[in-house]
Image (cartoon, rainbow, N blue to C red; front, side, top):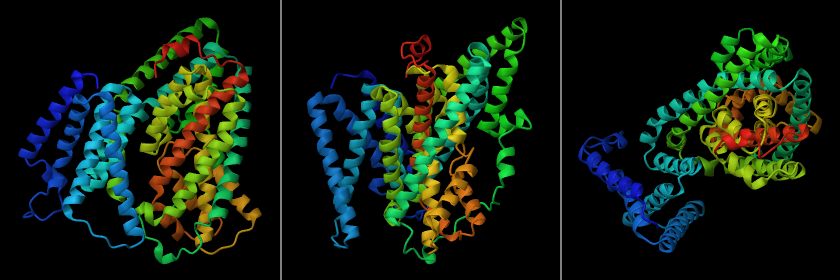
Length: 527
């Protein structure tokens, strides 16, 4: 491996920090909940030393030897994990000595050290976010109490992202409409976007229905399996309430509440009104919105430096308070959703990308970072600023990105729509209620309407599901079972939401004949 001075400095700093924290009894915090007279175990303080050792090996070993060492560590870790899983599943009752368990614990953290310090070689924000995901999972698994206490960092990151949304949407939409576009083009983008959204989400509905009817994940579940959780009581929404919610009664209230669709409606109308104003009065506002738009994208770049910490903290909290064991208990339902989402990506979104002749590899590289953020935070809104910037970087005009993506966050929730179709039928299966295909369609199309506007709120789809269950007379106790793994399901469906909306912006740009990877806007952005 090429000598990397920052890597060496980081390794030394980590060792010194580990020694200092150990000396000051810092890990008493991690071991909180133990009896005061219990001595700290090796596992309470070894991870930081193991991380540093992994980084040191990466620093001193040649490239090929370091790759071989990491491969051996990975094979060892995966083999040990597979053995533990099979031992538990098939009740082999093979006991291992504590020393073996500790050895593989250290091995895992040394392997993480390789990955963490390779970031000093790779030097990309996307890689650091993926590193943070892995470290966050390990912290949450090994030190659940400490992992849960890190939630504050993920909350800080989400707050910093949310403060960007309203001014960014307003500035980019108004400037896109009044500065470069005309009323006719806004109308064209509107009907093309809505047509595309409805076609794609309909495919998502049917894939979700097919998946749950094939897997029958809810069949055989008893009410005793449900664990009572604290979830909000909701009333079913009427069609009138759904429609009225689209339109803002106060733009300040909409911006404060982060209601994306209401902000879009106001900004579009404001931009159209600005077109009608004489040029002398229009020019100052156009210049202001252009400047504000550029500033908010730079603001986004600054906030993204905090993304690895926010993402890692979010994963540590999720694993810390749920544990990895929940995957085994509810594996059938979870795997049904993940397979259905993968089928949707391969059968629906990939063919669309090929039809519009999208450069797939470049598209994947561009969306890797926002999708990683969406996966960890379970919020599409958290990924929105970076996703918009990523689409501009591959050639989608900013005016189209600014219109299509925020609108898609309310009308093109591919992953959420698929999940809601699957979850609603799961509830009926668990309650042993037979639903005809026609009845199933009525339920899922109702869900498609009532789910508009939930993209910015983590796990808000659960609230929608409760309201729909109340509307159709379905019991709520199966929803308590879903809640046990809802965060893990939310990660996948939110990621698909982001991918779907990124692709939608490309489709509309191609449809308008304005997709240009060599545009000035694209070259100005580095992803």
